[in-house]
Amino acid sequence: MSKVKVRFAPSPTGELHIGGARTALFNYLFAKANDGIMVLRIDDTDLERSREEYTGKLIESMHWLGLEWDEGPFFQSKRMDIYTSEANRLLSDNKAYYCYCSVDELSSGREEARNESRPYLYPGNCRKLSAEEIETFKKDGRKPVVRLMIPDSGATVVNDLIRGEVSFNNSDLDDFIILKSNGLPTYNFASIVDDCKMEISHIIRAEEHLTNTPRQLLCAKALEYKLPVFAHVPMILAPDRSKLSKRHGATSVEEFRSEGFLPDALVNYLALLGWSPGEDREFLNLEEMIELFSLEKVIKTAAIYDTNKLAWMNGHYIREYSTENLIEAVYPFLKSNYSSEMDEKVLDKEYVKAVINSVRERAKTLKELSAAADFFFRDDFAYDDKGVKKNFKKEGTANLLKALNDELIGLDNFTSTNTEALFNGLCESMNISLGRLMGPARLALTGKTGGPAIFDIIEILGKEKTIERLEKAVHYIENELESL
View 1 (cartoon, rainbow, N blue to C red):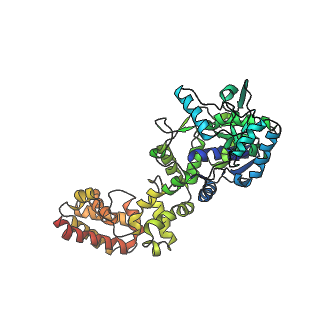
View 2 (cartoon, rainbow, N blue to C red):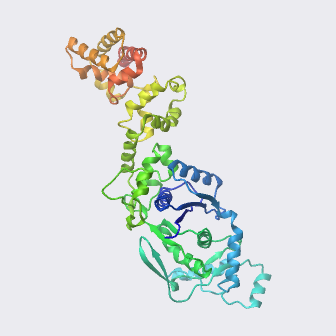
View 3 (cartoon, rainbow, N blue to C red):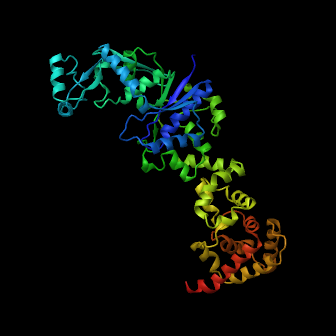
């Protein structure tokens, strides 16, 4: 095999979609697995829809996912002279021609095709214009497009590494436009020109591009390029097997990042959408993926997007991350939620470390992790309504919390082991169950009915904060709860 060289070529018309991210990942894995090169090319010839801010977000998303390219980014908008030159070469070789058909003329043909329930194909009206006809069109101020001349018979065959041999009848294609009237290249023309000029060996892209491939091959053959190898990876569909859209939840890398997903988890999940590493393996890092990846293991059938599985995988990574890396990842969420409250506590790295370790087991996203830690960073939380009914409204609860408070005031070493022993001793002396004391105590300290072990919570909060919250709960029960 000659040197492997692949490319990822997104259009900067929106944020990086998970389908695009999966394509980038497969290109990256194939290049690394074969000691090859990955090129990043920005296909920004759609000047009306392309945005510089989207380019920045695409590049940032690639960095965040850990998919580093070897060459680029190259921008098609800066390569216009190449497309013009190649189109002129085709015109000189009589493999392309100027088309002066007006919008109205083409619309009429499309309407006729629609009425007859058949696809519209450009009829080749301008294939053999006379010099006089061309001169008349120029005097009328018509600006021509450039069309590639397609063989009237035969077939164009795509030898796809995933789908095998796919044949397209040339009679089903028309003389398509390669340069628009404003001089800009069309997608199919610019794409194949760049792929071949950049010596891309393998074009790995989404299945939806398969129908573009015969046109690109025809361009390449007309230009006498060495043809790349194609591999079209399966589509990603929604759970109901419909086209993936916003109604199915987050669909871009930026959205997943803002929702609190980790890059390792997202990359791991995307790799399994259409590729099987074998041995029913679920969790792999990039190095392991590179070692196992091959196009032979990419399936033909559509992959189903399952946010529940992604969340489950993300929860696994949250539990497996080192504490230092997890704190770095969750910090923006903590800062966003508790900026004023964190001014002092965030300086205490040991405090933040203890908080994160106490709540990480149940969290599936960094958002959930941050939300689960709220009572560690703020005092103005509300008490859960069901918890109030179940715990605070029971007769004697205020006295129970007072007794607990008195015991804790006398405790010097505020460790989870010591507070657990204190709870057990108090329950035994008062002849009550441990649950009878722990329920209202947890609600008083956190406002919740569930969460980390209460003795760990007490140790992290510390003596002063624990006593302050117990006293606040007693005041609430004795003064405010009565009036509700």
